[in-house]
Length: 281
Image (cartoon, rainbow, N blue to C red; front, side, top):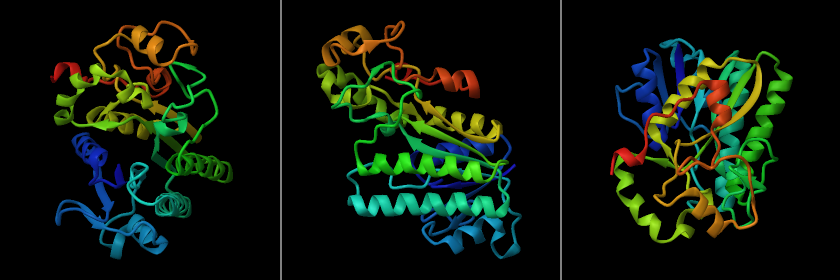
């Protein structure tokens, strides 16, 4: 396929672009930053006209795209003002999704966020491991935007029954060089309590995108995407007992299994994470 990846120069985006190209896809990166002659096109995604032009084949020199991966965003709360974060992320997602419907691009994979699960868990989750079955609980303007982006995708799929949008609720993206800090987390479980000690290796995040592109069932669906384990050497039983006493535990937590459940992604998408920090440190 010819695939447009917004935000392809970002931390996760670089892995996604490399992986999709390795799978034989023709990938064009739509971003504000990139390298000339690398398949990158400079696009201001807050400008709807530029988005339509880019997706339809800029200047007619390139064919329109078959599918779209939307990763571009201000990637976390606290990097910009709340107003700037909300405006940028909501507007770019609307422009990208709306342009896709106008151009007949029926497959979209979009980056949502683990934050819609209620992060940081100052208010404990309803149960552990957390999954996609309870309503969104945004606790920041960034997270509120992600929740509203998912809601927007749901409605656009209702308007356009042929449209397939898959929202991936990515955990905290990590590269191999980030793993050196992981052993230090054991000294204080509260340091990473905010996301149930989760993370996602960028390479496995890219695999999840590839699997989602192959999932062409019409309509909207969402999936938690995390690595198969926690960032901690301490056992899950110890961590939960210390940090979340009284929270319902559903099933076997395992020794170090992720507490951001990836069961649905495994079952529906065939997601099969291959990378762990434990093999790198």
